[in-house]
Image (cartoon, rainbow, N blue to C red; front, top):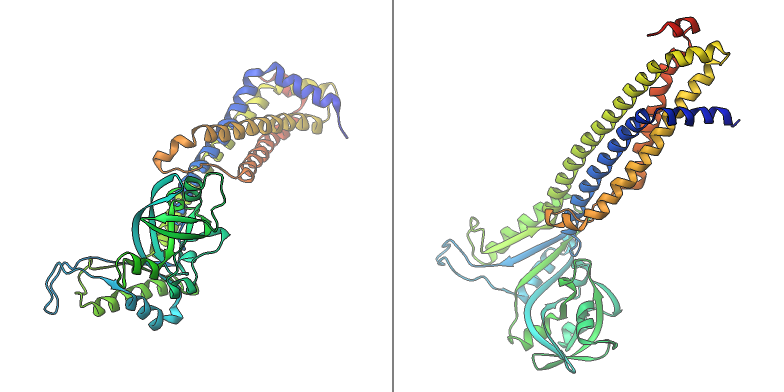
Length: 409
């Protein structure tokens, strides 16, 4: 049952001891503030690391060619390695059960125009599987198809920002864009979580790019999406085997690291997971230390509060106050101060993160934020700790005989 007199006494006590109340509240608010900032920054770092994989599937292997740096089997150093369609087909045929997606890439940079609008864009010739490896989100029309490859169709898929640049207020789908003097039909528009640069790219069928811009079967890069059923060790073993076989295929020394470069996203992903895991543990330890410091601070203050009010409690007992009412009064004060100060610390911490969020990007901290549930949980821990911190000394004080309490110095 709600006891109005009890609550009136609690607020009266807090009002008469403003300094004590403020110190108690400051201890809790500061602990929650630090807790919020620490976890917010940790989440910001994790967001940055995870952002590295936003626009590429995590099971992707990138295969790039370069120049040999060591002589091998009669071939001199400095020989350029050039991938062709047959190399794409070799990987697709020989490693079919290990490959989920595969695409070649050709890179071009071409001037584009539509009516009076002109600009220059990165253009990539790709296979249909590229959509899944690049995590391209087609929101209008379609992507490059196998039929486009076979017929060498002059069709393109454009990024959201390309459409905004060239088709101001117009529907892009079905229209034609002039790329370096050749007309291409827009069959699709896409978004990409990788950022603005990724949405200013134009995709066309790889066979079309080969025919129009070189009349050859060369490719600049081959990307493979390995079977997601593979674990980390199997994925690394697969990429190592690919590297070894491709070096044999091009007569490249096994010790030559620059002629054929194979990068497996699984390795980068595991390193990031390790880093974020260690960071999470470190922040958790520091955060728990902060909470413990707050708990100790509350406990010390509550012990001092009870000691300071010993005579008052003795008088209350002499006037007939029940021990449970004394305990309730001190516990309510402890819980009330802890809850209000904890909520204030939470709001302050989230406000600081919101205020400085953009300025932290230069330190590789992206969108620092913290789960409200986590901070509320931490506040509840402090509230419970405050209740315990108030209960134990209050329970002892409630058992003191009035005559003893009144003699207390």
